[in-house]
Length: 122
Image (cartoon, rainbow, N blue to C red; front, top):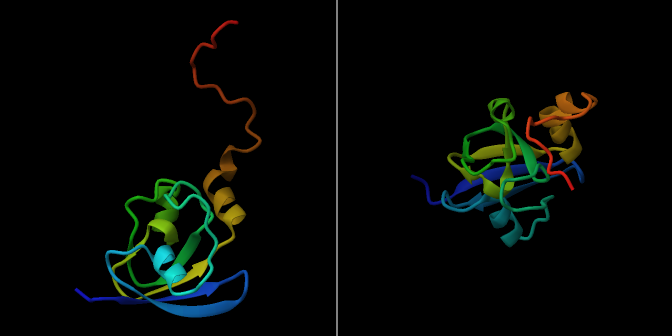
């Protein structure tokens, strides 16, 4: 196993690309910040899509990414806040709203949501 992996990050907001060295036991987002780079984030625990990226090459592990559906993971999306590199990696930041719509858009405009639970009467 490598001591560090090279992670190339293209930030779509700024159109900049930078490279960080990330140990296999450290989150990519945290390590990039420690190396002086600012990337989008919010919750830092894999529950939202603010730090979403598209993996363009390489392998990552993101078992804690509860805010990202399995189909989106299979399509190459990842959350940097809970992603560990498993090889040299190339990623591109994504717009949070785009990822959110890919994941939840099919539910919008569907009307009232019912869970089948009785409401407590006041």
